[in-house]
Image 1 (cartoon, rainbow, N blue to C red):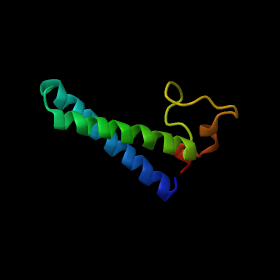
Image 2: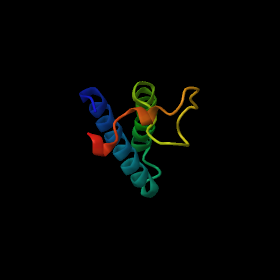
Image 3: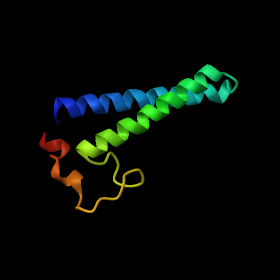
Image 4: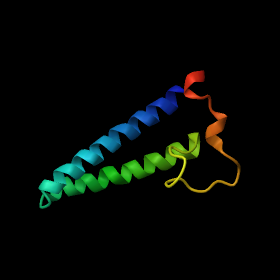
Length: 84
């Protein structure tokens, strides 16, 4: 895995963590408008980061969240985890 790809994956993990934590916080503090604003910003950044990653490196999941592709399965072109 290339350094740039690892960096983008790390950013995705950080954004997912922040979105989840804010979601849990908002479950108990639904009136907190600042937290809601931050949650919406994080979710927007997360969606853009996912799209950016998938355009450059292929799908993160094998179904459900990726745009359909016309040219085969891109994820099989990368080395398997045990081949790295």
